Length: 158
Ligand code: ADP
Image 1 (cartoon, rainbow, N blue to C red):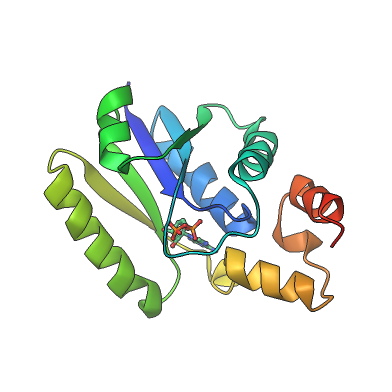
Image 2: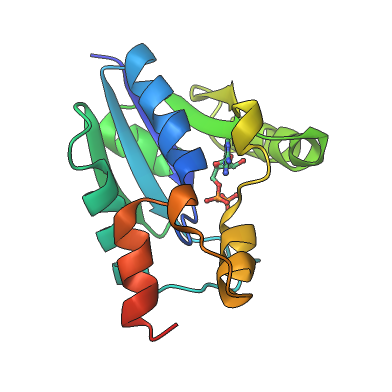
């Protein structure tokens, strides 16, 4: 069984993440969408809220699991027997960061290979921080996120 891990901040999960995930399950038997902590990012949602949104949004996709791991993603991959890590690429600006991250992951876990999926062109502008900014500015973000995310913003009173 080929297992992969898709790590990220998912703050919140967007249709861009969902699209990458849908394509990843076509390639791997099991994909774990992993909430990993990025200390460089200030978060909008708590870990529990993000996990709830990830679980609800992916519950009908066969072969997808959701988890949280506070340590290195390569360690998590070893723990569950995953051979690949999945990341998405939107633009050239993503490339530098992703290339460096892939090199660091390769140093930490040389046996774990990183696979990149290119964003669909209509999703290239979608990032969690853009969603947060658009929502804060009063723009309807419901076409860009799973329905549970809209509910979670409401719970936040935003
Ligand atoms: P991180 O903080 O680890 O970058 P994100 O949740 O922002 O976490 O993103 C996780 C991964 O998903 C990254 O590889 C990112 O490039 C990718 N990604 C985010 N949004 C999109 C999108 N709209 N299309 C394709 N890939 C995306």
